[in-house]
Length: 208
Image (cartoon, rainbow, N blue to C red; front, side, top):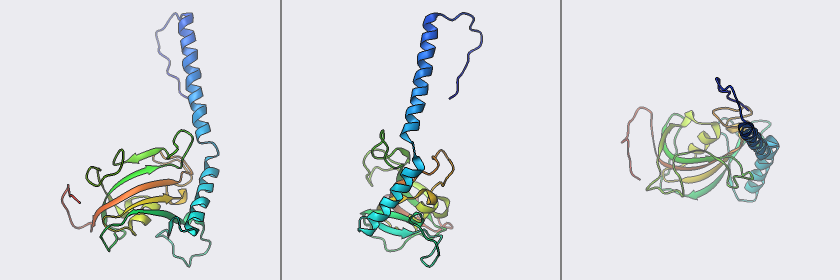
């Protein structure tokens, strides 16, 4: 916790001392609540991966191996897969390759916590309910996103919308990075509008 001390204050009343104490207590309480919110974070995320894997075995999710490995690799674990819910099926039949540009709408969340039962939203291109007509889109390069997101893109088609559950091993890993907590599984709502080779250009604003 950081404190900012202002210079030039000579006298401090009892009221100001009380107010300062209350502010410090509130700040510390908020930090304690945040610690509780993410207590045992690695263990909770590990347990969530096991639940996704069990759901895939029961047909709840589609299980897709990371593009960086193949099924013959030794030592594969549940963390080497993403777990997908197919919300909408598009009309496309081809998928982006590793070097393609992709136009997508997305919303990224952590796993559910007490204060965020649907998962804290750490990044998004749209707010509220998703709509193809109103959602803002982002242009990304397939290889320029985290491994789990990249894996999803390389299996999606134009017009697909997926909920993609990504183990932290295929996300930002075991260290805090880009503002994402260490050991954080990620769940992305991804809608793919278009993709194209890097050496080509398309309209800046392209309707569905």
